[in-house]
Length: 141
Image 1 (cartoon, rainbow, N blue to C red):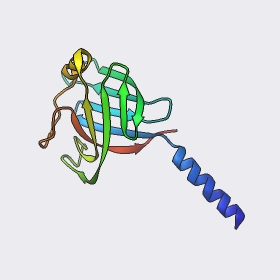
Image 2 (cartoon, rainbow, N blue to C red):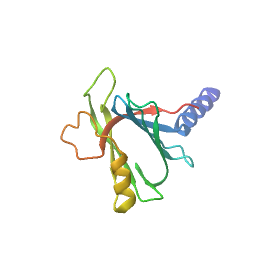
Image 3 (cartoon, one colour):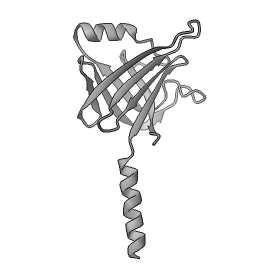
């Protein structure tokens, strides 16, 4: 009985130590990934246009401010909010679909330049600019 309890506690500790990753498929050619692994928090934005052979990558190191809120050194804020129920706009490709919302905000010149680099989302559904739907994934070890 003691060994079963120890194994259960070890499994529970291992599960809670895993990093979380969130993915937001903006449209067919753009994906935003957020890694929340402690000490390695980052936001990766990949834009791979069909007509252009070069992938544009924006990588931001971020600091965790509070639960679900991350901020880059240049003042861009990334806020994660969980929905009560998933919103499915595209069941096949998961474009702008999921039970998590990513809100990107900021002020000033850095944010303005960043916002201009961001592509328009698909299936905006009445959400404000720079708001995306996605899902939480288990990060690979």
